[in-house]
Length: 614
Image 1 (cartoon, rainbow, N blue to C red):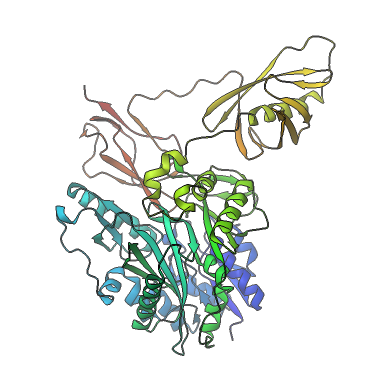
Image 2: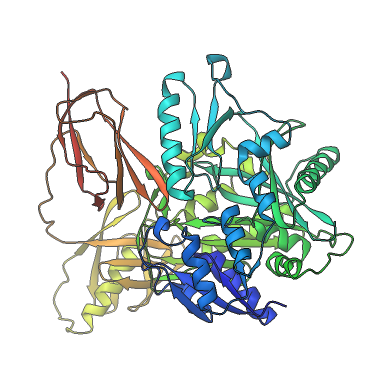
């Protein structure tokens, strides 16, 4: 019987595992890097052990330190969560060799399936050994790990070497394993997977299907269960293939078998020998706690002969600190407030006031809705996200709401190319034109309390704000009876609430301030000075860091004086476990190169200058 469990992970999955352990009466031990010293997962656990350093390679990927932490804290079991060491057979063996219970599949099953190349061979699928024009497009893919890291689509043979190098570097950084392989890239396919759960007594459950087709950078954004639109025959085939894969390696515990579905054909992708990020949609549909089931299986309990019946539909959206309109650039800063309606499930590793740093994945939370039908679940989730209070760095919230309400998604006609087709339309700003006025009036109310109204004609007051879509200037007058504007009737003003009537319709704006940043309802604004300060001038062709991160690589042979082509990759930044290419904006000559591998940069840091060739 497990009484104390170390969670070898961080963020929302660590908090989610701790929640189940608390319900089961199991004491929890967290591990944390220096960057995570005060993170939520360390506060919800019963105790915590420091892993010195901040980079994943120095902390959450150090199996020796984690096993040592488990023994020092008196834990008798280890749960790896997902990512990091969750699919590392060496870590599983180290846990077992230390006399601890491993909450996961046998190391031999991990070895058979954690390498996607070996898994494909086991399922009778061969990767491409040599790539020709006829094979294009192809997908370069990390043999270990998951989460979309170490993956690149290659459409030209000339780009293959660069794609291989980038995938190897990203995979080595994220998983400690730079092995990659190449497989055909299926255009227009759907990403469908099957959740399996197996015990040590020979029982294997196939817990329905999930559709995870909405992806950015090959990382899932919106997932749902069951996968819509599958014929009964195809769903049965997927279940049978998933059970076959699990039995082929004597699998134990929770795992996921992933497929690319095109028409009525299912192409085996991989088996993830761990819990998936999207497991809550399966939990909602089957009424299960998969973490609790993992623990019971590890304790030797037998599963019933069959799973409980599926009920209804569930949809999950991943809330990221990122800007989809700027090539999904990750965002850092302080998360001042995060709250969603109680009608949905929120799994998060953050709470109000927490800092979002550069070292780890930018996912803030998962929001999950369950309802009797797919249409009701989608509506519930879109509404909850629309009404959520999210104050802090830019997030993908608006993208999620628009995606859920997009006709292609609501009618279940989506595929993995959804964002390639629709991203510009989904990220076009649609600012509320009255939010800046509400913010200005609340600010004026606060200042008016310290002065007196004078019996003189009031001159129009102006205030400028930066918001999505550009700058916005508002005008208003302060009168004996309150405030007047040309665009709305002001029915109520105080420092925390403004009500405006526009064309007979009243709009409420709750006002929250964080220094120069203010939220008028859901709209984030930045107050601009009346007289803007001079801005730094950069030469044409200057390449500025689009995000905080680390320079991990400079193109081989690149120096000042190098001739480059427009679009040619010059250097790579790593932020939040993803690598981002910085390319030449024009054909020209590198006149300045300031970036150095290992250098930490802030947004706006000058990295290089490319002078255009006449």
